[in-house]
Length: 77
Length: 148
Image 1 (spheres, rainbow over the protein chains, first blue to last red):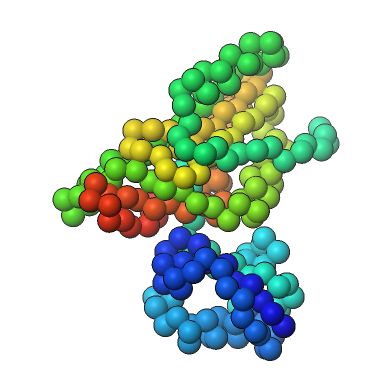
Image 2: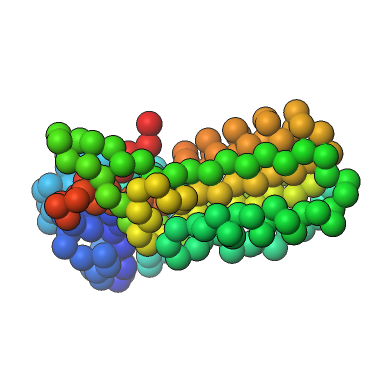
């Protein structure tokens, strides 16, 4: 399936884009992360969370949606 | 109190002005069941890091999720505390050092409720809402804000 991946804050500096479309044929968040880390090795050192349907998900969550978001540590206030 | 509340707009472009805050207080004069207000104002600090001073913070957010979270937090706070009303405003974009970036305002008949509610509310916002801050130094270099 085609996935849109969005990046925020310091993560977008590493990927040099705030959004991209990739082709994903596997199943879980962990498999997607493996793919993204291969593409952007510098992400490995960064702390981030993954959201699907505007909800934080864990690595074993199945990818259902076409939009996945990578979020660096929250810094509101 | 199972009243369904509609999501309210939280994000404001740029700094939150003293005038905006003052007007917000004035609007409550007609609500005479209120006996206590509590207000939290987050202000951008000019921290000095390795000899360089922070001049501004540029805020961004994953807005769809942030708005959803703000709504959830609002509902949870109304359930937890006996509040008459609640207002939350957060800046997006550039806010200079010394300016206000977060305005949280709670009101209740009694003071104990607002003291407890404001602390819960501010802590939960900082923990759960996907907002990001780029700290810009005087020489235009930057680092990413981390909440402590």
